[in-house]
Each structure stands twice: as C-alpha cells, then as structure tokens.
Length: 357
Image (cartoon, rainbow, N blue to C red; front, side, top):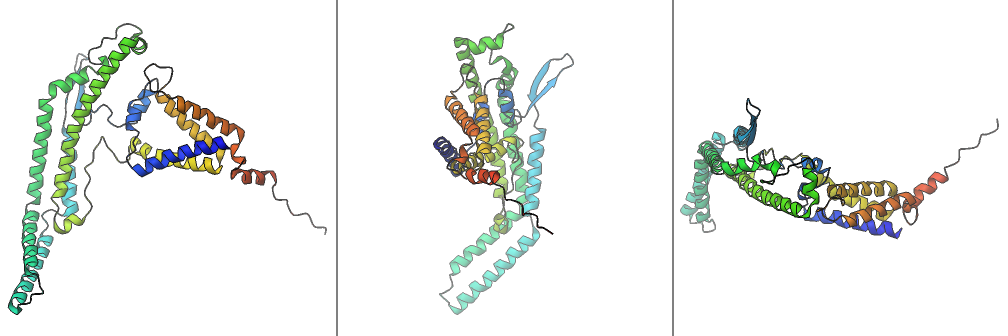
C-alpha cells in the first residue's frame, strides 16, 4: 500500500508539474531516442530533419543519382492562402468599415463644434480630436491593406529566397552527407555496430551528430522566424474593429495542431496525473499500475540500457518493476477504494426467494 501511494504521488507531481508549466513537450526526448525503436520515436516528430522548413526537394536523375535542391512552391502557396484567408477574415479594404469610421468622425466633429460653441469645459475636445485623427489614419490603413499585404508577401518571399540562395552550398552538403555523419566513413559489414560500441568512434560520431543538429537548429530557427514575421505583420494590418477579431493562423506543415507530437504533449501530463490519482486512491489499481508500467517501458525503449552512450533509465526500470508488483498483488484492496469493489464482487446481492403458490 505504501509503495502504491508513493509511486502514485510521484506520477501525480510529474503530471501536475507539466500541466502548470504549460511548456511541456516530448520533442527533445523523442529526438534523442536511441536503439532499434529510435526511428519510430523520431517519426512522431513532424519534420524532424528540417526538410519541410528548408524547402528541401530530393530528385533522382536518369542515372539513378540523387540530387538535392530547393522547392519553395509549397511554402509560397501556403503564404498566399494565408493572406487570402486573412483578407477575408478581417475584411481588408472594406468600404463598409470605412463608411462607418467616416460617420463616426462626423459625429465627433459635431460634438467638438457644439462643445466649443457652448464653451462646455466638461467635454475633452482634445481627446475627441485625437479620436478623429486616429479614425482618419484607420481609413487610410484600411484603404491600403490589400496593397500592403502584397508588399509584405513580396518582402518575405525575397527574404526566403535570399536565405536559401546564400546558404545553398552548406544546406545541400548537410543533407548530402547525413548518412555518413559529416564525413565519418563507416565501411565494413558491421559498420554500425563498430560506431556504437567502440568508445573513441562513438565519441566522434556523437560529436559530429551534435554539431550537425546545432547547425540544423540554427537554420530552421531562422526560417521559422520568416514565417513568424509574415504571420505577425499580416495580422498587424488589422485596425479598428478588425483588430478585435481573433488572429489568423498561418498553416505550418511542420507544426500542425493535430500532429502526433501535439497529441502526445497534451496526453502525457493528464496521463501522469490520472494514473497518480488512481494509485493514491487505490481505485482501478491494476489498470493504473499496468498503464504506468507500459508508459515507463516506452521511456526505457527510447534509451535501451544495453546500448552504450544512452541516458540512464535505472530509476524508470525500478519504478516499472514496482508497478508490476502492485499489479500482481492487488495493492488497491488494502487501504484503497478497490476494497469496496472487490467486496461487492465477493458478496453479490442475493436473489429474492421463490414464493410458494
């Protein structure tokens, strides 16, 4: 019972901590996965290798040779669609809104004139004049919104193309050598095993991999900055009542709302919390302990202890075994709500006796 409560409290604290922070993501955990299951875990991260963000296109020549280049068609099409949706959502260039603002300015002008004629000091004419001035600025801004949106699109398109052109050699070299880990020759039938189990080579491979990931992270961060800037500037065109609407989201293929990673990030905090509560209460203990053990098994699978260079998972292994003990011993029936469920099964309500006719 004590083991059940302690482990339950640990799960509960982990889950509530993730929920309170609001910044939990399994991205880096999955990205660092090693061992036989590593490719599966990494596939859960959309665009793990940055190809979509960097507009990488891989083609094959007639001779079977693979060539790496850039293709910005998808990115530019998504940008164009985003601007169309924003224009429709906010009503860029809306004549109705311009007319409404003009009518408001006329009413303000009448209030200012009346206050000055009557010498009514209770009316802040300076504030009303400022509102009229802001109204005029809004009209000019609304009138030019569509042209401004096209200008913003052209600027960001130029930024993207300039970045790709300036970094073309390095980016293509990066993806052209990804299977060789930056020039490390892994010849021979057991090349992968040698790279893993020989300490000096493993250290070299890890260093090369780390350098490549840092370089890739820098590139993708710069490209994401262009996407973010486009989204912010287009939404920033909204003025007056338009600005009261919800911002339009730029669809990013590398960061979709319903991606596997997004679901994982949402589920894990609640999973930990619920498992913790059930273990503490001793409710559905076998189900909770089995689910918790399965989760820990998946954690250990990302860092198999028999593969050198992996992060230690001893604590997870110990807790996994403890959960299996809880599962096998029906620990929820001692000092838990499962006691009442089990006693109800042992003592079912008796059927009414047959009455003599």
